Image (cartoon, rainbow, N blue to C red; front, side, top):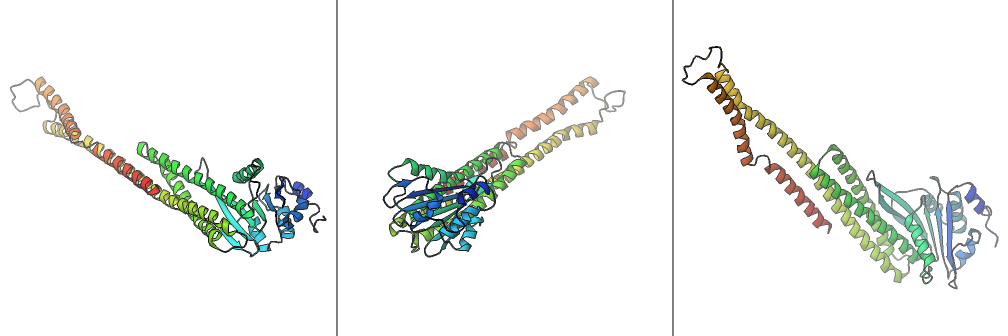
Length: 376
């Protein structure tokens, strides 16, 4: 079979112009024979096999779109230029476009950066036709490799259910990865809550705001993805078999649950911020209380010193006491030492130094329990 015009040097262009770019073709023909490394120059014949299933995966090696992918999508598949432009340019918005004979889907998988706690979104662009699936992503995706390896390992499956069910498997793995990001974010929130209770620092406040920004971004991402899955499960799309819509409906339920969980995480983060402010305020109150107690404990000393003037020597004490001056001096020292100790013992008996800290920890524990109940 002769390739269409402009496609003769595909393999050379893919290696020379786009270092690191990868194009993988998996083809199950109408007889059920699986071809794990179908040649790109024979892709047109595989697309014409309406009884078979073709999966073409494009992975860019650099930030710019792959010229080979653009050529294949335009000349072999015949996709609309606007859909191709959306596929090769990161749109950052999950969506579904119905082009009658095929649909174009933009979907995201989420991850949390281990050091900065920032949300990482990896985009997957999908063209789904009656017997083919074309995927494009600007960077490697673990669930793409896992799906392909699962197909290679399982001789019973081998893409026999069609392209739409293959799309279901890809989206299912993407959602599972996003659920792992939700769990990671939940663990980070628990860690920062423990840090706030034990040792609140300004770094804790910065971490809280980073987590809050991540949770808000994640929540906004799952909203459009929920609409994408709702269309796949309910709209009468030609490329989705009626018997397979129930699978996408299951994915829709998963995304709705994740969307609700992400909203609960926002409440947990808000509670952590309130806890931080309460703990810092409580610590400030304890410092002021300590300084006030020090001042109050020295009041009797100031009174005694100011009243008597410490004039026990050199004949300046005019009052005629029957006791010797050294006795009065020692008694004054004992009185000045006993007064602060007595006031400190009274403060401890009244539990002035304990009530505030116990109360703030109880309120923090209550907020955490309420957040966990809301998440469940």
